[in-house]
Length: 137
Image 1 (cartoon, rainbow, N blue to C red):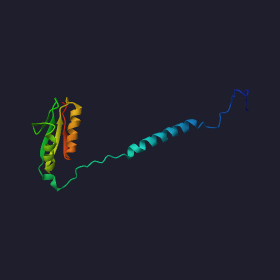
Image 2: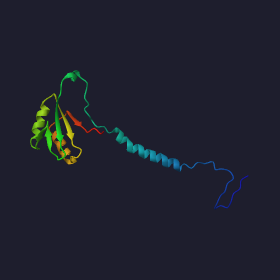
Image 3: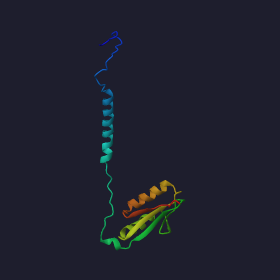
């Protein structure tokens, strides 16, 4: 037994047999957009030269320390260095196959000074580079 109200407001005693698929389509479109946005990020690669194990594990390395003080002064192996001297000294470090450059920056030093120094290191062609940090206690 079905009862129908007026044509403007229909009331049914029986449930409707159809499904509203509009929310389903909305969810699928959102998922499609998310997939489209995340695929380029997942495919992006940054090339990194990782150290490879080899027979030279026992070769002693000469560690050179490049420090940036709070005031912005740069020192190499404990000796104060000016901006003009640094590229020449770094070229000597690069020429020595057993040398490694380790940078340590004071936490209070200006970031722009660090960026300038790291740019000089990069232009000098240093590939064996490490960073020394502060230990929190």
